[in-house]
Length: 210
Image (tube, rainbow, N blue to C red; front, side, top):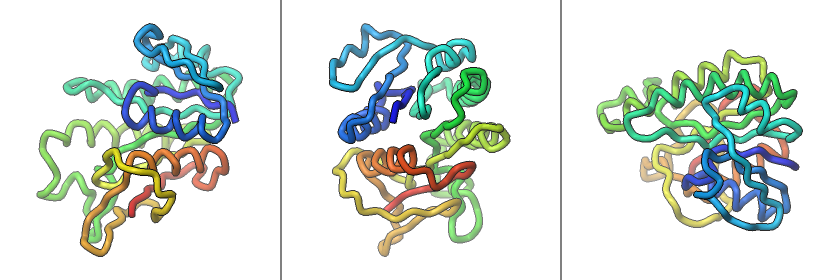
């Protein structure tokens, strides 16, 4: 498995990188400035590229088996997530690669009442612009002709430990017995690499939580 990875410098992207390399896969980390990400690990190649430019995407991902995007915009620049989605779809299509996996958001997952999580009163207002951008980006992938998969996390995702033990759903938020929706970054990464290695949710969205 030869993976092209965007967002390797972020918390989730780093966990995906660790998970993939731990399984002896090869990973090309595509970063804006390679001098700010100078890890030297077996199976890892680092190249410069701009996820917001389709021609850069096409050049960087060419020849890979799958592209994984863990890209996350800076606070206040949430709309770049939508721009990145358009760029990824066009660039990957032009590269000849078919498979795309995306680190998504939880805000558009449906609650038990049928209302999207981001439309519930408890949803943090400061996160709403990012949730809306994730939702709009999701629709772009959904309407594309790529072999895409969109992985929404639980409502709460934070560093923890890799248990390999979690539940899988599709469009509904998964809650535990205490009514909480949680997943560790490490288990989320494991689910992402599982899907890259053995596709099950091609052309669809899924979610993971405890």
